[in-house]
Image (cartoon, rainbow, N blue to C red; front, top):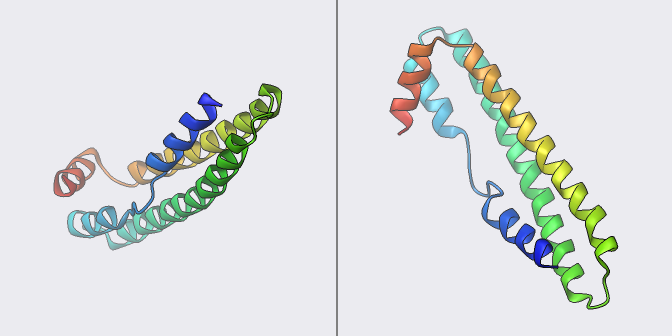
Length: 122
């Protein structure tokens, strides 16, 4: 159950709660001259926000399930491991989607625009 408790903590602290890509949308609008590209980047960031919100919902459900599991003294390791494997799988899917979106955004702009956008965000 230690693994389940650690998983709960990671989900709660690293779930992206409250994070938004608004700052990226604003920076893209300020830095990139091509309005069509800005529109595409805003679309990518909105998709990323949607993924973050979906992950947050999943993380909250997972956290509740872990709390319920932790309350069961008789729960066997064989009962916990499949659940944690599902959690890992879902987290990996989420990370893969965000990575894909990051590269979509990167491919829409030059390196100079990318660096200028991040300079504005920092």
